Length: 139
Image (cartoon, rainbow, N blue to C red; front, side, top):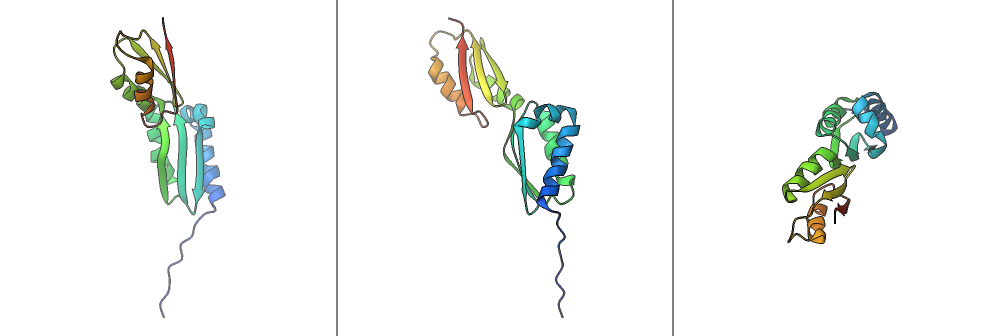
């Protein structure tokens, strides 16, 4: 007689609550908590949204698998402003400042001659995690 192995799983609602508690009690994450969404389905956690720093994003992703009941973590739609700012900095010309606030990018400063505001905004908008680009150049 073959015996199947039973897999014990925690209710997803309990897993989600443990994640929310962790976020609320880790100061850098608690500041960003309203911008982070988590859900669990059969122990498979999906995290989405934004945090300010790369280190905070990394810390959360490293901690999630240690929570009882978490079987996997999907973070395809979870971003940090620091990475977005660095990527935008590689695209914009000298003299253009990049400010990122939870995936919204503000381009400021002076736009160099020959660079079109709309073209630059389109390039920055293609960066993974950017959901809005606002140009606020000095005239």
